[in-house]
Each structure stands twice: as structure tokens, then as C-alpha cells.
Image (cartoon, rainbow, N blue to C red; front, side, top):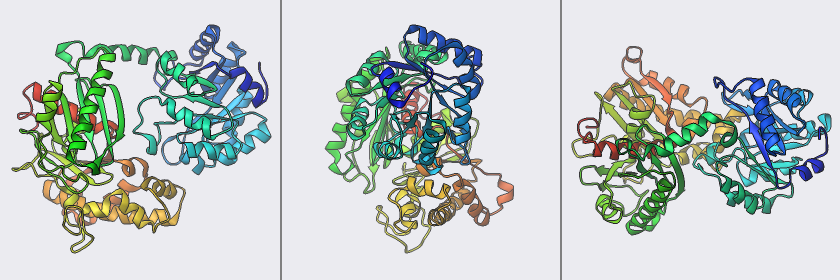
Length: 544
């Protein structure tokens, strides 16, 4: 079939597999003739259709197969990121190349760039069905209302609001099927046949699988990483990042490769016993996931909010974000329960370790890592060693006073940076027009005046706090992580302008501000590195 209506394609796709044939720039596969052969092989095997990017690839595939092609165009957007089919012109070019259907980014970010309006234009002018790539139920409902013919789960786990999701979620497919009337096609993170079956059992109309079928480099890497933990010399660790809102956890190889990762809400307000039980359940879940991947964890690393005595594995002091957590002996209980060595570290310190081992700070001896989220956390390396302080209470960057006598902080003091540079503060600066920091950031990209002013105010306070850090430590590099650091295009520039006014000898210091490259998994990676270093006897000599 070369042409048809949305109903025709729905009938042809029902209960079938479609294959996404794409390759990143620089890959040996990134040639249209090669992509076309991969597509032909998939169709010969029984695939009901192909998803492909770029006019060149669609043109080549159309010459090789008669199966339906879902065309997309990946283009650099004004916000610096890649956007899927961001213009009607790109859709028209795909149609002329032979695409039968057009997919586009209909997440909140895509909607901000006019995706909903493009749906109608593509359907009217090109007379092609439109597929909406989404990440949330609300985005799916909005895209359906705008006329989308199919809903695809493609971007679940790839947006700021869903970045914590690392595995395919059949339950999300079920929610979509229950909430929208158009066919739901499951795509994204379907890596195993059993996940494909789970998608259909959840009500998916069809499924699209890409990397697990078409990327031999990733397939080979998955086998290498899955067997990495089988070699005692390259043992894996369970890393757990206990935050006040969410807990991230995973199984990590010595080289920093994540064999598996997941996330769940933290019962932060339920007290010490609930949190310890929560950690115990996560250890067992992670252990099972490791064994499924032929890995044998040799230790458990815990990154937690609060200041930690790493030698005893005990929380010295925690703020109201984790009530009752002060004084908790995490190590003893988990070691007894699991039979594995346990290392415990402050979450911001663990992030700094991840930056040093796996991130932009690999070659840097003096740097500061700042995490912006529910709170404001900080960790730093001085002279190549992790700085904890004489009493393990160092790096309290969130509790630098930037507004004497100001708002009360959950630490009991007033005017702390955390109160003025956490996610809630950004929402507050926007005057109540938004419900989340992510919304403020996206609105600022669209030119919303209130949102832009909120980010300027936020950057002013953050720059004020970091200026104090810079005057004290004189770092080579300051790394920012967290939702706002990842989504705002202007934050770093605005913070830097504030620091330039307040840091003594700014032109001589050559301090670089940058976004973290390990932010999404930094706590998990850092926690794993801490326990692996402890097992190797390097905890004191390398990390200080």
C-alpha cells in the first residue's frame, strides 16, 4: 500500500510490528543506502511499516519497499535541542519523498513551537495522517483534540518532566488507551520481545521498535555491558540516589555503564523506618534486575539527602525535607539485610564524584557541582580530592545566606540560597501563573514576559550564592544540574553575568560554568562509584 486514509493504515497496522530505521550521525550505518537495506530486511521479516528520518532516507527506503513509511524530520530548534518535524515545509518534503504518514513532536515543547497547528495544516494540505509523539497523557489528549490520527509514546522518558523514566511502561500505554479514542502505538524503550507482548496486552494498537532491531552497535554494547558484571575484576554495584521527592536506582558497571535504571517516589514524610524499608525493597528489586542481566552486584552505594559520616555510614544531620532522618545508621541495617558491603554518601557529594569519574570534571582538580531541584545541593573537589569538611558537614551551598533576615529555610535559618534558588522559588517569582518550574522554563522560551523575569530573578539569587563560593574556593569549573539547568537556555549566561559583578578579580579567574552531562543519572553513578572505590581501598586516598 502506498496511499491511504488514517482508517486504512489503522487497519493495516493493527496488532503488527513497525520498525524505526534510523542511525545517528557518525555511525557506519548513517548512509541512506544502508538504511534502505535495513528497512527492506525488516519488511521481508514481516514488519508492517517503517519509521524513518530525513528526506534522503525516506527517498531511499521508498525505492526499496512498498510498505507504509512514517516520515520524520529531526531539526535543530531555536532552543538548541532537536525537534521532530518542526515545520509544515519539512513535512511537505517528506511527503514528496514518499512518506505516507507524518509524525511530529507534540509534547509541551513541541506544542510551544506550533505542533498543534501543524497537525491541521498537514492533514488539510498534504492529506496525510498525522502521528503525535507524546510523553504524557495530557499531551496525548491535547494532540487528539487538535486532530492527531494516532498517538505514539515515543518521547516518554525523553522530556524534562519524564526524564526519570528509564524503562518501557505498559501501564502508561493502558492509561492512554483508556483516555484517547484514536489508536495508540507503543514506541520507545521496547528492548525485548516480552515488552512488546506487554504493550499489546496493555491495549496498544501496534508497536514500533527501533534500536533493539536496527542498531547492531547498541545491541553489541548491551551484550558487553550485560556480561561486564560477570568478571570479578569488573564487578557491578547497586547505586541508589535517595531524594526527597524521587528515588533513582540502578545497576552500574565499573566503567560507568548503566545496565539498568529505574525510579520511584520517596516516602519522605513517613519517617525513618519507612525510608529504611523503602531502601531495602529497592535493593532487592535492583538485585533481581542485576541477575536478569547476568551481573552479580558486589556492593551497594547510597546517596542521600543530609550530611553523612561516610566512615560509619550514618546520617549526621538532615533538614525537614527528610523528617526523622538525622542520626540514621543506614549502613548497618542494609548490610545485615543484603549481605553486601554498603557505602553511604551525601547526595550532592555523590554527584560531584560522578562528575569527576564520568562527567566534564574528569580532567579538573578544582570544581563545584551544584544540583538545583526541590533543594539546592553542592559538592566540590579541591586539589583533586572530594571536600567533605572536618565534621563531614561541608559544602552546605544551599545554606549560604543570600538575603539576611529573609524567608525561613527548612534548616531553621533565614535567607538561605535554597529558599531563593529551588524549584518552588522559580514558580513563586512567576507570580502564580505556573504550577511547576518546567512550565516556567518552557514559557520563557516562548517569550512569556513573566516567565523570563522569573528566570532573571532566580539567576540573580543563584549567581549571588555562587559568587560567594567562587570567592572562597576559586574553582576551575562550576557544573549545574537539575531540571531548570537542563531546560533553560539562558540561565547559565544570566548567572555568569551576576557572578562577574560580584566575584573579585573575575577576568583573572577563568571560571567556566556548564551544564552537567551526567545529571539524569549522576546520583546513581556517584553512589556506585563510592562503593566501588571503597571496595578497592581508594575511598580515603582518592576521594579524601
